[in-house]
Amino acid sequence: MIPLPPPLTALLAHLSEAGIRPILVGGFVRDHFTGRDTRDLDIELYGVASLEELEKHLEPFGSVNLVGKSFGVLKLSFGGYHIDFSPPRTESKRGFGHKGFDISWHSDIDFAAAARRRDFTINAIGYDPLTQTFLDPFGGIGDLAEKRLRCVDPATFVDDPLRVLRAVQFAARFDLACDDSLLSLCRHMIAQGALEELPKERIFEELRKLLLQSPRPSIGLALLKEMGGLAFFSPLDRFEHTPQDPVSHPEGNVWTHILMCVDAMVPLLSGETKRDTVLMFSALLHDIAKPFTTVIHNGALNAPKHAEEGVDIAQEWLFRLTEDKRVIDAVLPLIRYHGWPRKLYRSHAGDTDILRLSTQVCLDDLIRIAEADFFGRSFIGERPQSFEAGKWLRAQAERLGVLDQPPPPLLMGRDLIAMGFRPSERFKAMLERAFEAQLNLQFATHEEALAWARQNLVTDL
Image (tube, rainbow, N blue to C red; front, side):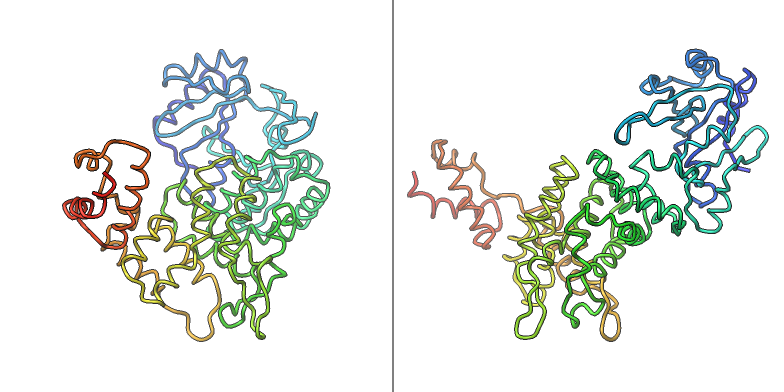
């Protein structure tokens, strides 16, 4: 049985007394078997005459959100859960893309008929809270136990192109092996252009789930490659054919390194979704230019300027998937500077170099990317216990107060006005000159900044 809190049990009993049979479905039931805790709950309601009737039955338990009413869904936050209530439904393909379906709502079909529309057997398990029994017409419980990902109905699975990417992220999130028939279906769908049917926002969201919610994102990426899907995400399809120096990268080609790198990033994530989205996509794309820059020089493999060249390539890649400029703007400098923590550490860089770097990229995030890059590989000999360059840079950045953001300018426009300067277009250049002097450690306090300005800017009066 699935233990439910008394308030939720009371709500379900109230619906039952009104002649409505509630069945818990979807991720909430699946996650009961995987040991995950979720507060999002989908409940199918059998015997509902109308959504208006259902709304009246739910009103005593809180404010009903009608946003999804046109789709046959009523939302309620109650007892610590975010609940979607809906009648059972069937779907039929009518057009192009992920949303090309006609939906029919029913109050009298059985659970198996309603569950047939679902994508995977592990998502087609129901739970009757009143009889405390599981409804499993397609063997999803056994598939979870066997670590197997199967589709419910091959004939209808191919109707929704998004299911290819859902297979990829579910395999990684729950460490499932893709069933041979499902793998064949996904290969066929990709070959027929399924990914091209999808809006880029949905593609980006599925990749984000894969990268952020998986203990080992490499499982999903490897499955995507096995399905033949990497060409859609080119130049990721070229990583496998791009060798690396066997001394610094004993693991082999760039693809192998990237798989290891995204897995190495998992324990380094911050727990903040937006920030972790940036970190994971940076880990995925940090070597995106290596297929174009790798050369053999004096018998040795090298990829000169791959970080710098990677900025434009990654920008174009990300724009194909998202309009979120904040994500793109945060990813690009992490790609550009991902090798700098080790570079500064090896050169015994001084405070000025660290201060300057903090004006280009968030050092805390950069250290995380560099550490994932460092441990996302094999080693000749014993594996290091820690990322020394990262530890060093973090200590220096904390001492300088620039771990999360650059140093604030010590000289401001109001200071120039107080000194007798008239506001003009020259202010920008003057303040930039002052900030440059600050980064060069020519002054470290506001008073010293004023003294520097009187000595160096007075000729501009």
